[in-house]
Amino acid sequence: MSDSPPTGADAVRVEVSDGVAQVSFARPQRLNAVDYGTLEAFGDAVSEVSRRDDVRAVIIRGDGPSFCVGADMRAAMEGTYKVTPQQTMEVSDRAVLAVVESPVPVICALRGNAVGVGASLALATDLTVMADDAKLKFPFINLGLMPDGGATQMLPARLGRQRAAKILLLGGDIAAKQALDDGLVVDVVPTDRVDDAARELAAAVAARPANAVAHTREALSGAFAGEIKAALTIEGRGQASLLTGPEFAAAAAALAGKSKA
Image 1 (cartoon, rainbow, N blue to C red):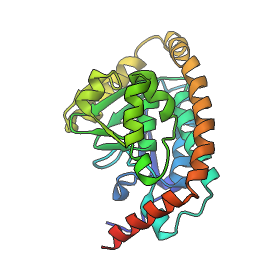
Image 2 (image 1 turned 30 degrees about the vertical axis):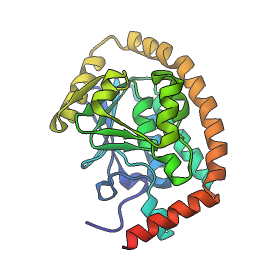
Image 3 (image 1 turned 90 degrees about the horizontal axis):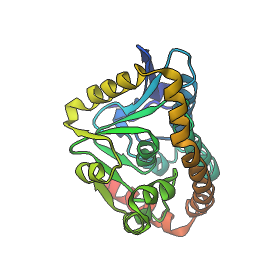
Image 4 (image 1 turned 120 degrees about the vertical axis):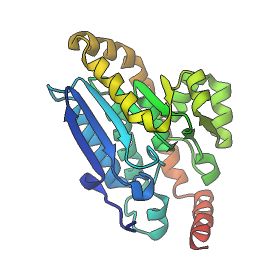
């Protein structure tokens, strides 16, 4: 595999067919870890395609074995990630809000791992189909960071404050069966069925009366969007500080050492 994965528009693929748009992370070399350019292109793609007259539903997914494993830590360690912490948070927020504010339903096809902002993107969708061996992962705290992408609002809203706090404060994971039991995802299927199941769900949504779907979606996401925006403001301020702090520096140095070994 190439050591120089695509970024920007080259790292995101958009396909539209029969009223359904599919927006894919296309960096399987890095398990769809995202850098600034990739997140920017992803957010722009979701925003643009969801407003097309011929699109009734959007699927977000990732090429290869994982949906999205969060920030491209390898790029950060190699010194090729040349943006400020504030810029990083802003582009991450725009990607999440592109999903939350879509005028049409957004469905996530989740294979492998959804880590960090990848997990937040999955939680931000209307419907998520998850592979039976997949996990939602929130490792921020172990890296000297805090949850972002609206996770501090979305997870407590679904699990309750105590259970969400345990996961986020200890850097925990949520396996597929638990995610289904907790109402975090709509279905769990074998890995090789994830894309088909997501397309079937999207086609079913796209076949419903468009105006009724749009108004229902708006009602479902109205208050939700406001709460996420409030969380993003708090997260952005805290994370920007932590990204320049000593705890993250120590964690990054440790990761760099393991990478070299």
